[in-house]
Length: 156
Image (cartoon, rainbow, N blue to C red; front, side, top):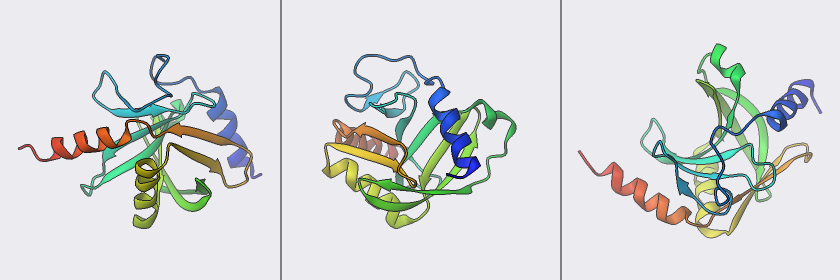
């Protein structure tokens, strides 16, 4: 494992979740107090999947973690190691915004595949390229949140 990847996972496993946890945040998609559509990883509890609209206007799922190192970093999009999404190797990018680090598929096909996995499966497993760490996200309630996001885009 590369040193940067090892540092990432050390930070990841030590991070405190950026939302107060309720018992159901890892069981199904919910709307946060800030109006975000989220589900928490059920294995470690320190990552969230976030359904949002990208700058280009398409629906996207981001993997988000709290990372205080992001405060001092630029919001440039940079390459990240590939990640397995339910067994499919997917190229990934990352960027920082405030105290959050966002991970998203680097290609349109990857973004569409991730959306489809949440639409069609009960659980989406995210595994690191080296296979050391797996995260599990419930897909329950995802389609309802996706529909709500589509409705909200239609307003003026």
